[in-house]
Amino acid sequence: MLQRFSYLDLSPVPEGGTVGDALRNTVDLARQAEAQGFHRYWLAEHHNMPGIASSATAVMIGQVAAATATIRVGAGGVMLPNHAPLMVAEQFGTLASLYPDRIDLGLGRAPGTDMKTMRALRRHMDGSNDFPQEVVELLSYLEPAALHAPVKAIPGQGTRVPVWILGSSLGGAQVAAHFGLPYAFASHFAPQMIDEALHVYRTTFRPSDTLAKPYAMVAAGLYVAETDDAAHFLRSSHMLGYARLRMGRPGKLPYPVRDLSRELPEGVLSAISEDLSFAAVGSPDTVRAQLADIIARTQPDELILTSAIHDHGARIRSNAMGAEILKDLCHV
View 1 (tube, one colour):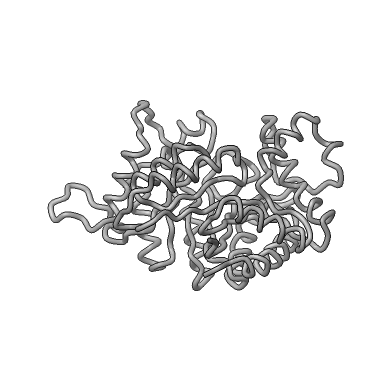
View 2 (cartoon, rainbow, N blue to C red):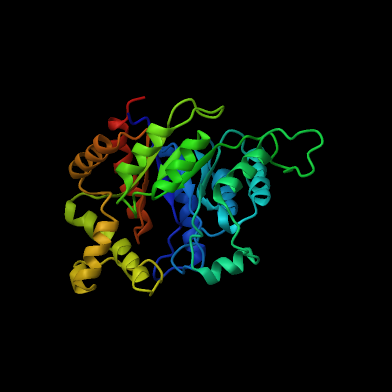
């Protein structure tokens, strides 16, 4: 039963704008999200993408946490194959020490970029990286360290930063269930396996010191405006930008367009419509019905909403209208 709603931000860089604009928009949007009642504000790690400014995720988490007072702030997520677990523990241990009880650490098992960029990030790749083992190593650094432990995360040890497992397939669900950790499914861009993944997570979950029972978060797009047409117009920026990425032409977040069928081949438009189908788009009444359907289908403990809207003010208004709807749909 839905308890909370949160927001995922990739700090989109708009056409006609700069990375600085995108980062300032993120901080402002986070302040607004806190006032609107969102429970968490997460940032996602991507690299070598001109339309996404959240690559230095831990840095931006610190900026958002400093600009807000109560909302939880975290990574949705850090792509663990790109980093040494010790460094992640130190970064998030530092954040947790500065902002106690407000920091989350979501972990993904994909690089979040192309192989050339992954090599540039990690430098040494011997093929032996194992996500479950690295999760264990990272968790150990966040626990109180044994007196004679040869390596300690300072800051980090004893902070017990809440760790989430992210995924868009069965692998992440299995890892989250095995370690008794909360699970977030990336249905906002990869909904195809959501039902099976949630079933695997919930039926194979093993209680842990962290979590007594499964806790599942489901991601969805959120585009609310006064009318259905206006909301679809706002969303066209994301659709067009995502399509260009799929076609190997990544760029900044495009200006919205009235007719996507005039901008994209039919096959591409069909494919991205399927990828991005887990979304609530329309007037408040339309979005309420769509969100209710998503909740009824997936039975999430928490929804995390995301959007890429070219106009910053329109994104704030979309979130505000969405938050009022979600407050009515929550059962705490």
